Image 1 (cartoon, rainbow, N blue to C red):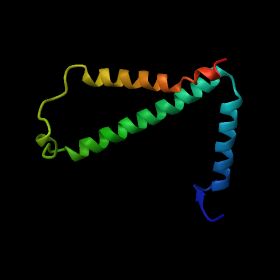
Image 2 (tube, rainbow, N blue to C red):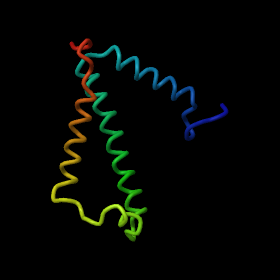
Image 3 (tube, one colour):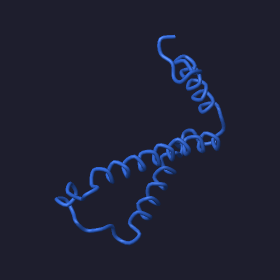
Image 4 (cartoon, one colour):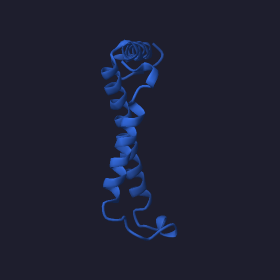
Length: 102
């Protein structure tokens, strides 16, 4: 075992688990596949949003970096609107292709 993740998982264990999940995803019903895809999309969306928020807060802490671009604050409800549109996009991208419907 040249490389291991943590103390219990080897790279071959991770590969086997991922392969099993892909097989399950492909062979399962439409609704389970949809919710698995939705969960993955939402997880990626949330992790990316939190990471970008954290990095942008660190980079623009004293607002020297961002003041050259725009000094205006967010509009009322802008974040809520963007989050809602992002969640809708995750739902749309989770839908299986029409040839795979039930």
